[in-house]
Image (cartoon, rainbow, N blue to C red; front, top):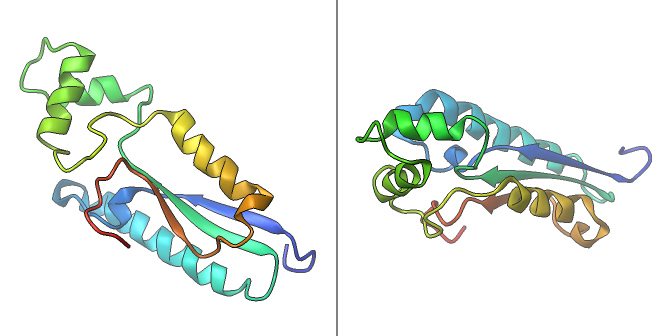
Length: 137
């Protein structure tokens, strides 16, 4: 890519890389390392048209999420919607979105980062986390 002076590298990380959940320290550590690697690689692209960025999704709707939500719910008979509401009321109360992120919402950010529109976005950790991280930067 550097020789061609063209290309995009995108890491899919997690908001846990910045806001480490005490029950997920092991997971957060890997995501923090991934963010550091991406930023370091971006430094190698100085003066080129190659970009390296990270996307940090928050809790995302996926095949296994319903089972996970039910496993942490206080009500074993909760509907998926009830389990999700309880999760955001308790474990992720700081979320501004207060719902699972849809995979398509993350895909939209990745699409932007792969496009020519993102030519000036390099070395960034872009949030798609619904406002879980309580900081401006």
